Image (cartoon, rainbow, N blue to C red; front, top):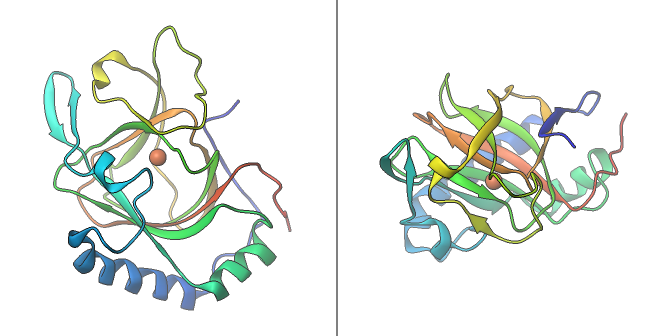
Length: 196
Ligand SMILES: [Fe+2]
């Protein structure tokens, strides 16, 4: 079991896909407020207006919105990163607080990331255990709004412009988001990488 792992030897996404991804995320930011565009992993109703407690303080949780990048990008992913995937999106973190509350992902077992903007110099993804439970959870959507029940056991400041994989069945949260946070994410159910 691992929380995350860098993936060496994969090609960077061609710049025109990165440019398009940022444009789509920026346009989506304007449109997403009506909750009719974009893809909310786990459903908008689960994430928007979610309140999380951390160290006795209440926070309005951030949330991610995902957007398709295009069929040509999906094809590039198939040929260069992974043959079978659940979704390939650009995701933008939204919300007013610096905290995206603890959760496990429901649409994917693994997330292969390419971080474009981290959300701030000190932004970290943190991994947690809930005492009395397995570290890896079954694939279903679950949020953990009282983060004071959790025990952090790993954390990482993501590398920029580098592929890495996250074990999204472990409880995770993101702290100290103070700026734009945008990433390309490939969701998979297993890890049959095409290493170059
Ligand atoms: Fe997540």
